[in-house]
Length: 340
Image (cartoon, rainbow, N blue to C red; front, top):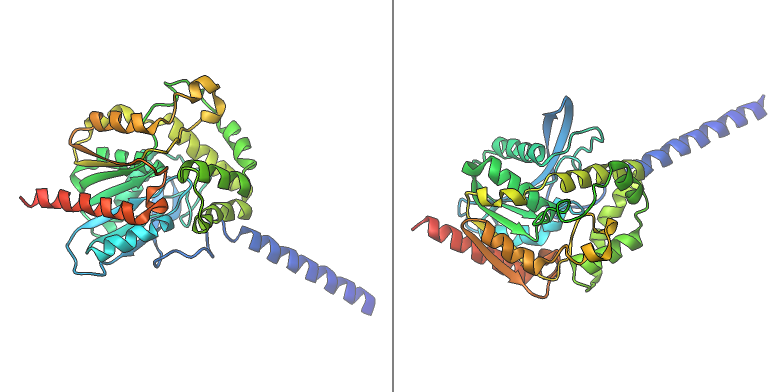
């Protein structure tokens, strides 16, 4: 009898341990234990017959408030946390700052059966800002967030003081330039093979123009924590988000922007979605940011171009002080003109 009891107890303990390990493996999918630089809040959001949570940081000015708000949109492999140094500088200059984790990313809900579109993400963001009582703001978008910020400015121009695009992707139509349509299945297979080494190599080459500093590692870790927690769902989300980026260009609507626009471009950037699927000849024609930056500035009415000739895809991380100074100068120019 005692032997049976011990056997049952052992089985129970093994099941309990297995359950705990399984639960722990899931922890991290929404970056539960990854610290953000400021307190994170969550807005309940009903969207596409789902009850979701949208994570954001809402940071008050740390100096005399100037009554202006800056809203920050992250890129695909980024999160609101990557804006930490920028938030600090803006708050110290008197701005209220809201940094959002989009649905499907980082600390927000991550439905895998959601119709991801820039229109939907822009609408989600607008709903959040309306709830926070923010009728008008400067919208800043980095990387994929630049495509989203552009869509936001096209949908809600009356709610935008200005559009600031930091090394946005989508300055060219990749499909029109020879990138084949990549199926979600193929994107998924590709993302299932993502490793820490591969992520770091790509970030070093593209985000930081070949440079590497130890403080960049946390952004690799931020990405890979989510994949280690739930590789299948992370890979699937990445796949359908790549599909959104590849098939929903904004470049053809730049001439329709009706708000003041600033482009902040690290010229060493070489980002081009789908370039891994093309020949070397086509690859050479993609992601030429020195050319794309100037072409885009000409296409957008009332635009201003700020170039960082030695920086890559993430100037706000690679050289935060220089980026922050350029950002604050642009804001000062913007609001001084509006007050004239």
